[in-house]
Image (spheres, rainbow, N blue to C red):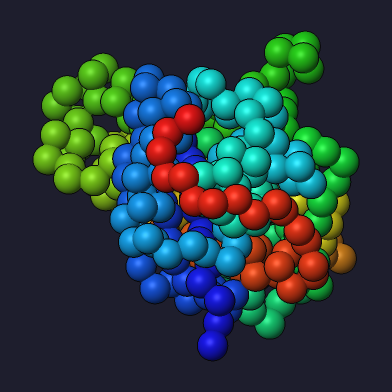
Length: 328
């Protein structure tokens, strides 16, 4: 019988809390939307509420957390959130341990999702595995031999903060990848294009869209919309460039595209693959595969359960306290 574990995702747009076991199998899941304007204190109340919903009075043996920003994974302290104010230098592991009465292990959410995909998703059978998530921000995680790559604290594989060159612009003013290719950045460009040309295919499709703005991009491009085509070309260029940095630095066997924009699916994967083949050094061509994430929105909770199970098995210790499910 496997011990009860808790897996938590703390992102820029959603928070998820799941019970499960050390094999990454989810038993129950609670999901909530994040309001960045409400700040970290409100988000912490959501986390405790979600934990109360899935635990129902039980105490987990361990808790794994995937946090959307740089963390000190040894101490479980958040260094900063780029999306929600109020997290800077917050002792997340200690705070949760006091309230849940369990040992708590914190890592970056992209690392945690990478672990889930490498073990139970599309990265199975490949090593190393590099995971790039494109959602409210852009993050990366590298799994080697079934374990995270950890650089010096407080972060690693921050591929969303690599610079994208601009001709005639000093390098310190080059934009970061996240500002150009994240879900929010792409959505802003789509809305701006629709306002400029309200009768365009892009604007008409956007007015009827039930999903995020990016969901209409390929349809608008197929209908000949020039703005949609430019946005798509730029998105493919930027993501292929990001993957090329990971490919040449770490030479992963499997590259995984995750996050909300990965839902654009096979057309996006094929376009990035073709562009990346041209960017890769010749000896690397044909040695890697780019795949769409297979665990969907469950990647971080699944990875968080695996993280908790791994760390408990390794003998990590965190002081136990009696559960106290209330805001602090």
